[in-house]
Length: 317
Image (cartoon, rainbow, N blue to C red; front, side, top):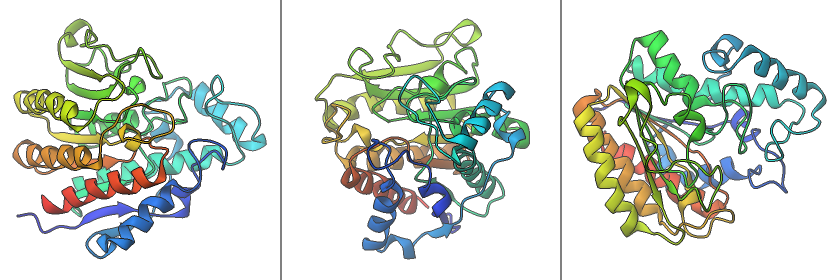
């Protein structure tokens, strides 16, 4: 039994990553989660940790220097969009986006240094940003940076990236599409009906990585039963490939009632997935797993889904 604490990250630096009251990725998401954590007295069971800012060199593990410079310039005047209309610039966006990345890397450090058994950052999992551009409310791709960071700093090569956000994690998938050591499993709403329109079951990797990736789609209206059927494939895939570290992107936008998606999961799916991954992490990864909040635009759903993930992290200590 692992007696080390579960770290959960909290702070204005994370809450400030938002695009205003009228945007789906609004300013109350961080608060909704932490209020629920407090109401359920989970804040007494976890260790609350402060955010940390990433360095430019850490951003450059994934992003091009031209794109990093572009975000830095946009951060000064706060005008326009960083993509084609989903991700607005605002004054200070470079700094707060760097805080999201740094916090994810701090969670990795805590686990690799054995200060924590698991770690969860609610404002992370920004899986749509590509190397040279923003996308889908995501400025810097902390998931992609985390993969490179694990490899370059800690020598961890066989990493599992598991994504249960309603939207396909295209920014991660296409960057690692030819990387046979990046285990990729993504359950999402059918790309024919939802942004970014990718993640077809036929997309299993390319080159040396052909048939090493798992994209599984759900039709609009699918719920817990359909999710659990696909989850069996994810479990078997991970057990067969025995990762060294697991990154869980647990977007809450796959729950029923999200304003921009059409899946009908409940928080039970998130709890089940997290507990399953903790068992696999205990067996193959020395317990090493981090959770990243990802999407979710219904505040009640955010509270339910993410607290269920934290509970699962605590149960499996």
